Image (cartoon, rainbow, N blue to C red; front, side, top):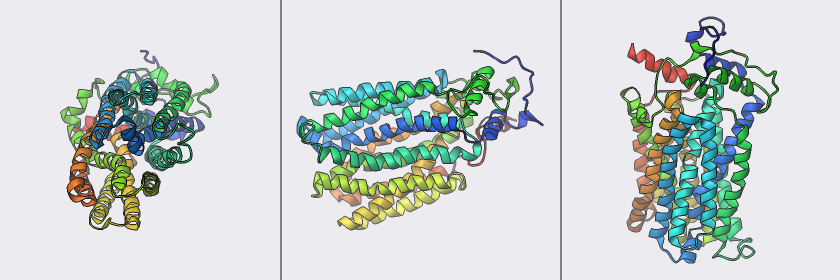
Length: 481
């Protein structure tokens, strides 16, 4: 690691020590073409992540028929993917804090590609189970590491909206397109791809191969200046700022940062990049609050996205109808995360999560009581997806904002991983409730989870309009005085 030998004051005018040098530097840059390229490269990986997460649920009937398995085995496959995601989140978070965001982000996609190709050639249930575990490990850290990386590379005034934009492409467009993609595979392309027994294999292969190209392009990503500063690498942080301030990820040698960082801009909080640090007293309240909210929000989202096609088929709809209706419902997902992106820089995180959580709870109760015919299923399903994505998009951005740089990736990944555990556990409970109470049981559970989410989210610090340093390092120092 290298440290700058420049003077011990920042080159920012005025009292630099109180102005958060790296935050001021990024604020002065605005939003450049280089930063847009970073956003697109992160977004590409998130898009494939979303399609992959929906693949088993969409191909459920074909997989069950081809491998002669039942609902319990199918749910176990989903659970293996979710458990893999949990492992992947923890490992990726530690790697990102220890070796850098760029390294971790590229490794995630390589592991995911391996798992996807193994899924495509799985010759029995056990092999598919193992391959989906590998897929989960690969995609597990993708979402939160990408968000943590972007949050450290953009101006404060754009941060919330740009992070939410990732979910527009992944959770919104990704969820909507994924079911259209699977509908195309199971419809007109099923016969050319070998029929119902092999089309699900093609879906896994088609999703895995393009990810390799994303890995190659991601080699151009710069490391974040905040992470470099957390490692004491001031000169490298200045070079990263110069790239972000330019119009290309391969700027000319003459490109310079508009602000020169010095050792005075190093973090005032000394933290080791250990996952255990997220449970220390000074940040434990944040971990508990956001962790509970993540369990409720992401647990209900994963459960419903995974089970909805199967639940519709078991209510008498055809496979094609179930996929079409699920796709229509996910119009609400697209609109929801778009709305979250539009309000992220204008509405506080607490206000957005609380309002969307309450409305999501009420919509789930309405679905539980009245979701008995096709029209109401589509309308209430789309509304619930809308409020779900407003909540989850805001919560994802918030999660990346409430930890110091040295443990940001670990903290975000662990808290998001708590939601990952819910995604592994809650489908089993939802299936049991569906067996006794039909849709009322599944959406009654979702309503309860959203009510708990609203209460838990009230205890996390507000982050809108504040630099990451003010939310974290500076606030932690002030609390120790």
